[in-house]
Amino acid sequence: MKFIGFKDYVKEILKTAEYKKDIKIDCVVAIAHVLPGCMTQGINFENARDNLIDAIELWITIGLREGEDFPVINGKKLVTCIEQLEQTISSVSYA
Image 1 (spheres, rainbow, N blue to C red):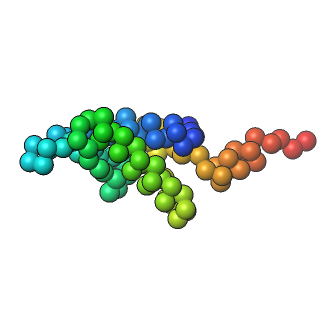
Image 2: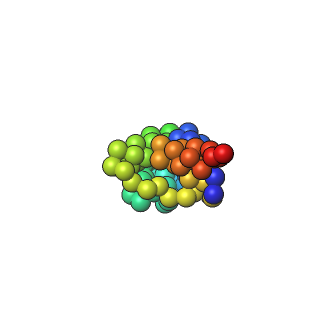
Image 3: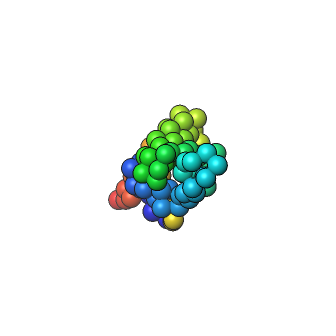
């Protein structure tokens, strides 16, 4: 498992996103299945993708505030202060 930063984590989530054209309400629905409840819509694909980026960033931000553990996406995990501290401690050799 590799630890990555916020921006790269959002990119990994976008790789798993699903987009569906909803003919009934004439919009594109964007869903990030790896983040429960994270979905949005837009008037076209580009608008739906931009809105999904905002939704993903908000989902992560709230999770960080609440101390949530984030899912591993495509073998990559969002690095937080705790992971950075653990990596630093484990890389220090004591003589």
